[in-house]
Image (tube, rainbow, N blue to C red; front, side, top):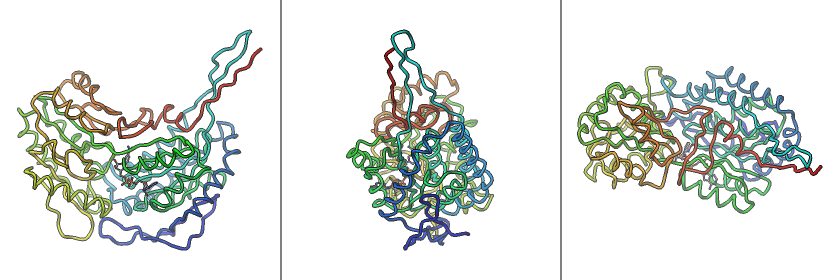
Length: 470
Ligand code: NAD
């Protein structure tokens, strides 16, 4: 494995300290990662500021060409990046894991390159001409989490670059390596300073958010940190896009033929070992078929191979870090002690690494922590309901609203119910499926703003109206 470096102003930036990035499979060291500092944040912001004017002034077609070249470069390095993601994050090579993440990064880069925000003429007559255009907001700070590190970095960086912003990215200290490598590759294509990467934790993140020369923060992570980001950004009225936690509900309508839906239901709940913002995190099942669904789903889940993601036989890897493993274990124990029934899983082996078994919890109730709180792990509580209206009310009862889903034999009927969910994306007979042209974001405490397509692009711009009297 080659060394990793921060990139500032198009060059590897020297650091005095490193920290170890651990492989969640066995806690071995994947790499010693260079550690950023607040002084390096200042340098990175200065280099992004310096690069901004000429990057913003480039003709659109040139920025599009650069984004397309970046997509080609990521694609060329697909195996290297995908293996790196498996090693630092744990997700598997097989199934919807690390290869989906790198493939998605390429697809989203190309899709973002294809977008544009043309000028709009509002008035053009003998009295005058009014034109509205969108200008890049300036220097963007991107702060990313550890669950889909490279994909989320791409979701932040590419729209910013597309419209003419420059970026300083700070990845999660749990999974910085794929981002550092991607930024290094991007610098083969981009002018110096257009994309910079600095590592570090809360101190470095706070400094970046508060920096007076940053114009916008795009943040993906927990609600608690998102609130701090918004507070920090308020001092200089920075623009923010916040993609925060969720606790997505899925509702299975009464009488649903469950067998053909089991596979999609499984991935909806357990993709990336459940460590996905828009994974299905509480499943509501009608009392008339509760036992049937619990038994069939548990039997399906029990057959899924869990292990080292580099082994192509495995479909689910470990939990990504000790902090999350402890949180997940604590929530399952709390449910057990509160009277829930662990139908499958729930008893991790005392082996090295952060493997938590795929766990299905029956007899779960809304008052249990595993239902109320985002578990963000390979655990699904199944809750009983009596009427669909009641299930919708309970699904909507939390202060989060990222995604939600309704499952049923009649997709039209299910879609009518799904539209009553208070969330940014409502799925039918699937959960978590994203499309680069479908705007994605949360309502309530799940976030502010959207990503993807032109609505996502607009978040990196400010509006200027030029109003000419004739
Ligand atoms: P986190 O909030 O702990 O950390 C996210 C990032 O913020 C990391 O890079 C971290 O170092 C940094 N950070 C921590 N404190 C900071 C501070 N005070 N100021 C600035 N930056 C700071 O979140 P996490 O544990 O990495 O990610 C898991 C959470 O992210 C879950 O709640 C999940 O639902 C959410 N998430 C949401 C989406 C979405 O699109 N809505 C996507 C992925 C993850």
